Image (tube, rainbow, N blue to C red; front, top):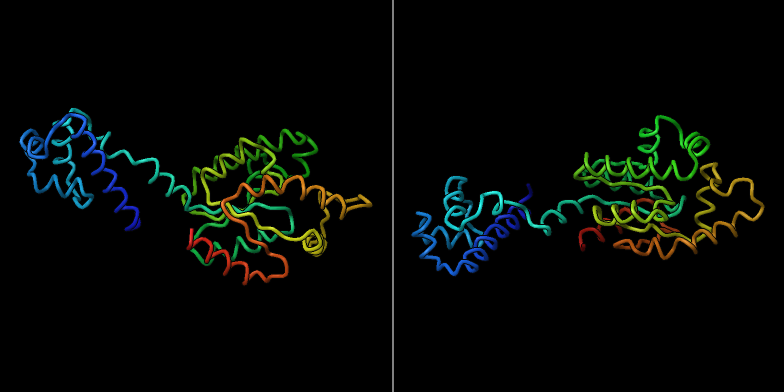
Length: 253
């Protein structure tokens, strides 16, 4: 556990002890007498500076009429902070999620995960086959299960999501709650240029007005992408520039 997390954790235990003591109208001296733990040690504990042993903490817990588990249970804030050590990238295909995500993960020593690959792993077949056999609803089910597994198995990761994940409310809520989420934004022209460079016009393949369709999709999803914690415009920027901007953004957050 990083030093900052340890400090927050000890502080949360101290705050819980102090709150329980106040509820029971116990002075620190009274708690010291009831628990057999010195008043000086209790003062350190309540200030978040006491790295107390389990046995002594057990005595304090019993004197307060509660269990050790209630004192050492991590606060929601500490748990949320740990969960949000994951970074998730959202945005349309061509925004740079894969290239930027892989480089960012390498730089911060985190696991890089492309969620669509995990969806294929979950279903045991390719994305094309998933849509052909199970349809859009089936893909959404596999996507939700894949995300749940990824979050459970990876406390620290950079996750590149599929462009349409934001359209599934339950899955997107889980992503927002569990990760620091960044919308990688680009102009429609930049999206199209990058997608064509990849040799793939999905999901606009075969349509005469591909650019108009792309603009429509981007316009429809923009309010959903905007729910992310931060936005990074990648238009006209190199992968290196985007990663540097993203790292500064994460450091500030």
